[in-house]
Image 1: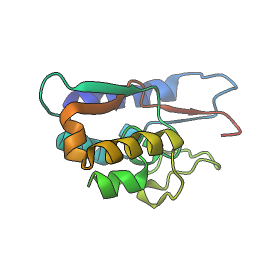
Image 2: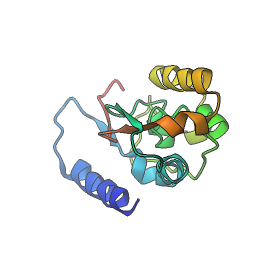
Image 3: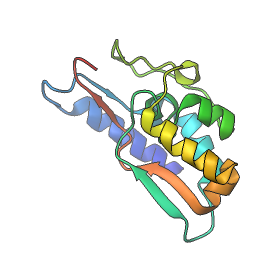
Amino acid sequence: LASRRRLSQELDALAAAADWGPRVSHVYNPLAYAGEVYEAYVRKYGSGAPGRVLLVGMNPGPWGMAQTAVPFGVPEVVRGWMGVSGRVGRPAAQHPRRPILGFECERREVSGSRLWGWAREDYGTPEAFFRGYFVETYCPLVFMGGEG
């Protein structure tokens, strides 16, 4: 987790210093403002037997990982089915059409609903699912244009 914290700090610095051009108006780093939730997820499900399948997402969606810092992290699934919670802050500058509401967000990320719906249907419990799989993202930053 210490290396992930360092990565998050480096990504924050990079995102703040970068000129993303006119197509990117907002950049969120869920590991920075909801890192407590992410760390709880990793502590609970991140260690396991060798040979697990790693499912990797591209980058966070606005109604999933952007809200909870858990990859594909539909808030009700993260808190309810997974039993993971924690403090969710807010990015310094929020896009008006993509506010961070954390666990109070009622919208659902379509890809997260599909992924965790499959996991729940086929494996029943998160413990059974995470025995064989782990879910991560290779870019935790959320990039948004002016329209969101």
